[in-house]
Length: 213
Image (cartoon, rainbow, N blue to C red; front, side, top):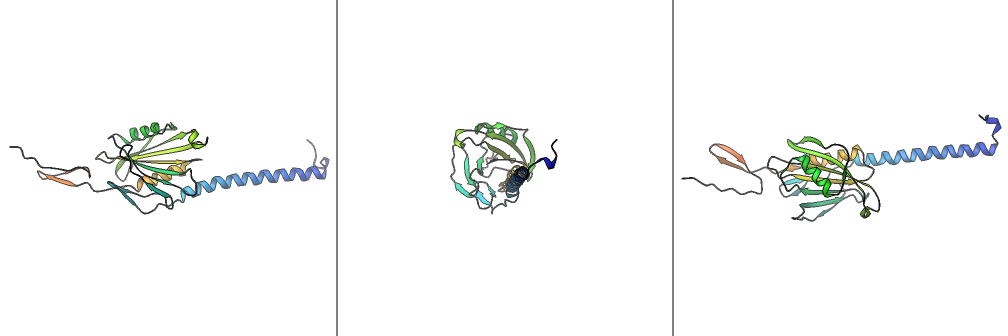
């Protein structure tokens, strides 16, 4: 191993410059990753947006596009004006199914490769599930996107799906999706009195009483 006195002054200066450059690069990369995690974690939710049968809170400051599509079930989209590759889509679940099957079907719909297991949980008293997938395609200029899908399915079966697209995903991104899911408030279902019992019907159903002879 060469001793320090064997290095020429120019070589010592060059080595110091390289060491400082590597140190600054490491600090910059760590700061960038920390900034991304902090921005996601600190993203606050806006006031509730009222949709058919429920309300939901989306990230504050995001550009919202309301374009209901009865065929696909898409209700609205929101995009982060600062980071264009961060977006949220809100859908009607459509078919009555378990939350786990709903999110798995939505991942396949986006041609996303599922990573990890589907997490089942209870949100505001309703069964829910969250899953993650990865999307790579020409439409994203070769950029790999992470897709988090969450679904909340109340007792009437009219569930809500929330998609969250982002890059460089970590646990804070999943936390943001969970906070959006937790903001969902379903409208009270109308009660129907029948023989001293209360039956609850979906909000978009109508009822009629038929008396048998």
